[in-house]
Image 1 (cartoon, one colour):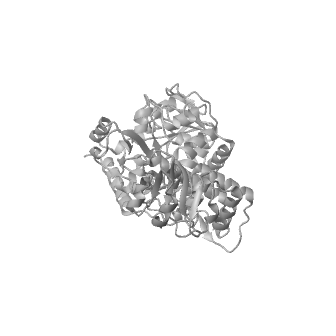
Image 2 (cartoon, helix red, strand yellow):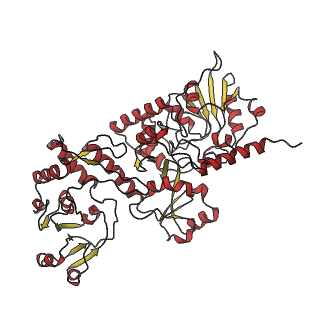
Length: 553
């Protein structure tokens, strides 16, 4: 129950670890918001079910219809509801006479839109924002006592009454601000961000447990897996999970017996992996991800089964609005020189005149994407050999994977062997300038191939990455016949970067659109400082590198 009727109806959810943030700040200047804008906002708030504590609990409800009641003075209310056959008491003090009139009682913070879904009417105090939400949901409202919502008492509150109240209570006293940047915003953007958060929270509500999440990942993953109440249930023992429930798993970090036990308990496993714009450091160095993907069908890098991403690309219809946003996002990424692990505005020079330049990025050879999607190409050396076969006259640059170079993962090729196929081994240059410089890129399943598509480069795939098979790449791997659609580059970007992943703003610790994370990654001063775990991990990698290069006498 709201004790302050001028509190914003649209509020920022309390995501785990997030900084306090708001959509509004007080102002003495009347905002110019016309009737059409307010009418649009009221329709959208109702259709998207945002406003109030929409992220809160969604308890079981009795079969409707019922009258939802939330009042402070229960005694005075009973006489007025005596003729009502079915009541759902919300936050009732629990008086016995209240229970006699109740279909059920519900306590604690709840999602008001959920509570109203089966209701046929609502009775509230006249200073309770639930009255406004019930009116927006199209229900008859009865307001008791004195307060700003008294005018909503009606069989169906009139549109002009709703518009007037919304303007007086939620528009005139406030200036709208962007919760990520603090910059001036508008009512439309506030509704859009609220709807974005609603979708995220609702998608997580059924997750009963999360397995395989290292302690250094949890602070950035938790807001992206939060279901609106309590903490994200990070677990290590499968037996704590009821049979048949959804669980989030970082499969490569879950012990095989635990995975087997989860399967034995018929758990619905949601695969979680790093997103495609991840951080300014390596996962192998324990730098937490600022982006993840959560897939209920499979996992995007395994072409042997469908995934949510593949389903999107095969089935979705993309509006012109989202395609335009995808184009702007693609251009922004390219202009900033952004890749999965870093941003670089440096330029790479051509090596020789008159020859086609090809980049071959190495991968971690025991990575799941290589094991699942590499087909016959299981090693970096085999990839390099095949690239040379395809382009015998080209100038080939080989760039080892940063996790391999850091000494943490498998996939190193001795320089001597490497240079029997490649013209050059590139270590000191970021990958974005290299992609911009070359004419073509040959990959197994590397994300670098997608990053090359963003930059308009020719991409040859030897394995089956998620971006193969949509008419944008030269595919040498066994692309599954399920991928039958021809997609434009902006349709691919819309699915891969706008719809499929989840992003975290490292400054506010709020889930955010990709544009916000890209803005942060391009401004290193706004990013968290490197912690002791990362520094220790990097030292460990350097020591491992040195040990592997020491030759016996």
